[in-house]
Picture (cartoon, rainbow, N blue to C red):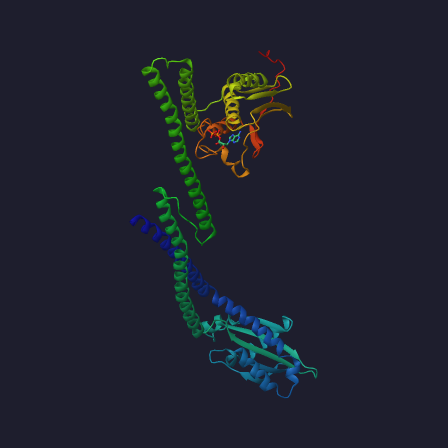
Length: 487
Ligand code: ADP
């Protein structure tokens, strides 16, 4: 219990920690960028703003009657100090002036203005630079030299008047702006952190909740309860996990049911021959004249049934244990099939069974002869067991495209289409209550399947209920030129 709690809170906390860390990182990045870049970006914006302003104050404004007001208001909106001089030779008459306390314009002497004018002319009528770069004058403070940007342009109106426009702007954002931005950033940081924590919490609950429920159900399943619905509505991965677990419980409960049925069937199959053997031998011991060959035959038959059942169980446990190995050899499948069918013919003719063997000639394969014999026997046993009244069984060997296809065809009860997949499963038996005379362990076909899988062979069945079944398997033809003589 404590283990579970610790695990789920781990998801919560790690999500929470990651979200908080990412948020902090983003905020730190913002702070650093603000500190480092605000000045640069501010200066860059101011410069471009001033250039735009200089373009705006063209001759149409300068020629208008209200140009003093218009230019002054443009300068005010742009937050810059400005002086416009009418230039007449070497005389500069200020006609509009908007000053700033920390600005430099009101400190400019005639020689400064004329030097600036010359420079602007050299620069094709437009100049922009920091004050310190333009003048290394001791009369100005270091802050002024560093922080003020001068923008200048020369405009000539249609009637020949020349104007020299000088803008003087600060390149550093005012302190108040810094404070506003810092406050905003702190506020945003707190909100972002709270949102991150909330999202992390919801997300963790959304992930950890279903996982906790699934593991509680899985714990139940481990105790053998299979009637569980794992379905969860959550993320795709969790839904996939619950689907897989649902499928697993289905499979487990199927195997569980089959195993229980098998035990019931096997104990029944073991008990019946044992009762018969004990009964008959007691009669033969106690009653004179009962020691007849017929009675002895019953005992032998029942003992044979027991031994074949035990053999099946041993075979399947060997295969399950992975001990099945192939001891391949080259042999004639036609001869082997013919021999096997002949044995069955001798054994089963009393029961009215007839067998037909159809083959074109020797068909050599390279496989484990004993195991293939076992496959043939299991298929023939089933053909016999499920034949009902039409007791004719055909075994056909067909050679095509490099493979030998063996078909065991009966005319018996057939298999319903919905059972065709199940019959290959271990412990599956078509009929729950086993009929007397039909003896099988429910392992015959799964042994066939394991052996054919071991050989990498293709196999299958086609069946029509009431008409019969055809079980088939294909082994590659062995085409060695020096074929040993078929015995
Ligand atoms: P068993 O025969 O011991 O029950 P098998 O594994 O050999 O076990 O076969 C599984 C099931 O497949 C059988 O119980 C039967 O329902 C069905 N089956 C197998 N062979 C045939 C067949 N030739 N005709 C009809 N049903 C068959």
